[in-house]
Length: 482
Ligand code: ADP
Image 1 (cartoon, rainbow, N blue to C red):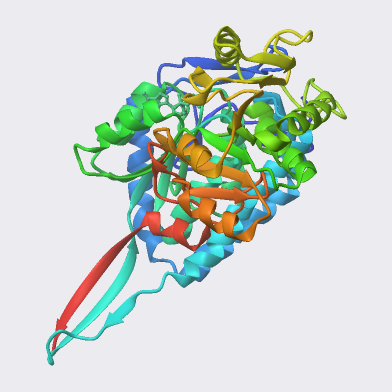
Image 2 (cartoon, rainbow, N blue to C red):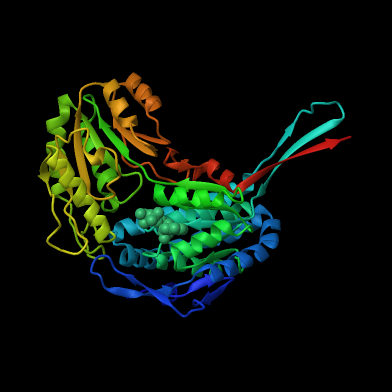
């Protein structure tokens, strides 16, 4: 592995400004999903080391909280600058451990860094209120204060951005943080910690604990010092963590699963819809929580859309993400491949047909062919469950009311997309979709300036935008008698 700055490749956890091994000396291996080769290892830590990280975050809290927002912003801005200066190394590291093509990894680094930049600025605008008193001799003032020590647990699909979306607002608000990154992708997190230290973020303000998800998660959710948990991952684990947080009534932010509908109406610009579907469905090999999971296409354009999508998908180049020209990497592991295969088999059994892909790719390992299914029936499993892989199932629909009912018939409510040109329809459908995010005539909706988050079983809270920092603040109302 060649990096311009070899210091970025860290195989130890980061607690209280120190690079640390597990007390037990145990490690877990990290592998490259493109070829199964071992990249290295990270310490297998548990409850004890997590407690030490929480204590460090608690010790660091008063001094960090008491800095001015501008002083914190200056340090965070340096962190942002260092991320951008090291974009190439960080992107390579990400491709090695996660599998996404290098161009996508570069994109994620700048996307990840943008949250640090944005929240550094936003921290300066944590305004309160003065409220006209309810009595003549009272003055009412509202201030906002950092919640305190926070915990974050992040997934492997966006190894960098899912961290900065939490650490950016937390640190800008004056909170400190203990992070547990996904076991598959710890190196991106540890590289961020290295840059945080170089940027001047004080010891204990940002800690990264690697190891056993269950043991670390248990300590993070049961330790009374931690006042808030922010989690991105599956609904199943989110539900568990929320229940664990219930004991202390810890605040929780949850970014969970989705089951995004992608609707193409008869009046859509078809080329643009195909481009959007390709980006939304096949980016990161279909492994994003806002990926189109079900494509609903209206009768009048169904066949043409299917054909155009087929042509577009045929151009995708699978391979090791470090190779030039590769557009699509491997899936993260065998379990992910199995899920795609199950969804395909189920749909075929219920009457769907394959028009592209459908099988494991000749490259072997975790590579799976980008797949399109047509005439998928409404009772297919893929209509209800998130595939998290490169499978585009095309459902047919007749009218607007029908497709809105189908789109909303899910426990999830993260992202939805639709393509239409009729202005009244744009508003009607946009308002009727029960989702936290609606992409209209676009397949890409994530950025640091907009609120990202879901409703229903897709989660609680918002990340990014002016709303994202609220998740790390408490409101205090002071009633002053004259
Ligand atoms: P995915 O299917 O995307 O891997 P998970 O919800 O399983 O989603 O994982 C997301 C994050 O949650 C990862 O960092 C993982 O290690 C962590 N995690 C998994 N199980 C637990 C648990 N029982 N307690 C705490 N964290 C967990």
